[in-house]
Length: 455
Ligand code: NAP
Ligand code: HSE
Image (cartoon, rainbow, N blue to C red):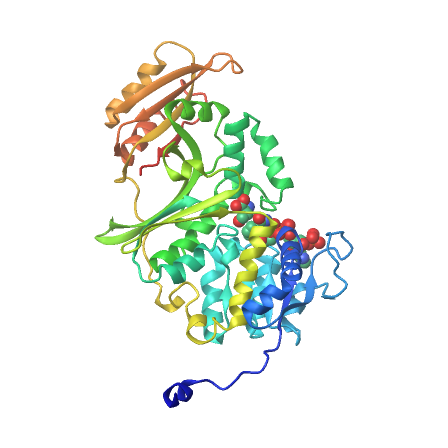
């Protein structure tokens, strides 16, 4: 008994509420207010203290957001939130890599406030600098909602998988693209029509080209790479292509071959690298995913991330990747961690799982020697000799063809779609074949290449 009492901590008094300021009251910001109000009692029990919103900011004070803002202080200039004495945590839910969001983030850290953000663009571009300041100041900076919406994948990698060397990481990282692809696949609806629905549901970025051109997924992949591989964020080196060139005919063609099309982000350390040193391979590209692969069944705005740990084996994180509720859930989880004090001391020094100063600089790995199978789609003139020209380029580049299908396109008189699946071979061979075909009068549009996801 005496031994036990010697280790018993003195009873603690009630802890003061954690006071937060919210910048941005759009899809995510309004979702955070609703969550904090709806689950206030539960959150207070789990966090050991109440979490209260003290001040908010958006562009238009009078917009109807379906929430009562009268209990909260209002700032017209969001940077003023960081200077308020009644704020412990600044929550940035505005968006944009630079501009007011970045100014607010800097000000928050400068005023020794904890920073929580859902802004993957800002973290991908400025996360290292912000984290270095936050670590030096000893304030936590958290961004769970920046990657894969409501899925606790950053927490999963930083904490649950912390003992593992991650060998490969890949998955579906953009809810808008997944919603578009899977809805087109299920309903045959038009791309623009489904994108408009994704925007109406609050999934898309303010500028949806960030979604459909793959930039948003690349932001997220570069953040995950830093956490998984202990490398400095290198967004510029992500080999990125989006879904805007995918035709309904590609989806139908993939289906007839036994695949669905999904935008996949993939990262791994390539031991062959360049110059004798390991390199970091990062790519966002639409892939053909075999029907029997777990990612083939990820539909709608759902995201899924696979991380392969050297002791854990394959971990699959799956859940809603966009939208107000799931994203608010991730934002508030970060706030609860701060309220609990998890980020005090050492944790605040390891924003990307390792302190920023200890992250390694890894050169981008060249992709040419990667082996894989590819789907290549051509739109070509419907005349004799065109198929022979394409197959000759493949032969000359050393690409082995597994199947070749030619389909007329009723809507484009005089043009046909040629879809090809290659046997496994180096990606450099496919690039060389396409180089040989460059400028050919037979091609009505640049070819579209999608890798086929292996198991
Ligand atoms: P949103 O609906 O467009 O909301 C943006 C909010 O920021 C609006 O309330 C807007 O004010 C406010 N705002 C913009 N510029 C401002 C300025 N200069 N001063 C003050 N307020 C300003 O965006 P969202 O979808 O909530 O996304 C917010 C952030 O979360 C972004 O970084 C996004 O990438 C990220 N995110 C979004 C999702 C999602 O599913 N939507 C998921 C994960 C992460 P008004 O309302 O008055 O115009
Ligand atoms: N626009 C993003 C998406 C929001 O569609 O995935 C979630 O980050």
